[in-house]
Image (tube, rainbow, N blue to C red; front, side, top):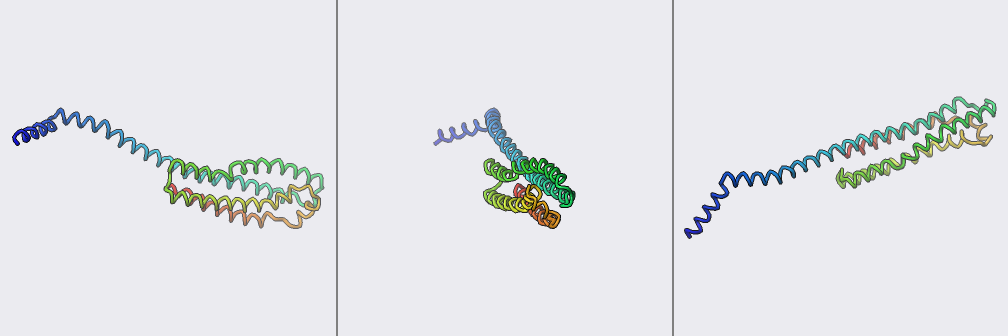
Length: 206
């Protein structure tokens, strides 16, 4: 019994010894501090990535709106400057100029417009930037956004067919039924809905 008490006292003195306490403190510090710092750094990096992603969503949304607006503006300008009363040769030249401007604009939109929201989704999923519930919401927003783009492109198909056509009858009907003023109202409505969607997407990263 006494031997057991002596052993306990020795152990107690060992752990109370300043050198022992110093060694234990150093070991804990060397293991604990890097772990805590690593966790804090990981949280900081994730938070910074979330902020960048939210900003990128808003930036890309504005960029897509600008691309589509340029296309619509080109049609509006052509409609105003090319009534059916102008000579056929002049009309053909203006149509050719419109084609040279419109095709690159649509190519730029087509290269990113349909994909950027899903690239954002994949980054959020792979990097675990948002919770599973928010990830599902993001997928729903993406689908709605792409449906909006489809509606927008369908609206733009009408002036595309009319003003880029080689058909003489289509050209003769152009001045009788100008379309861009009415289409612009629908295009602006779709743009406003896209703005709401991109804001909702970005808010998921908060």
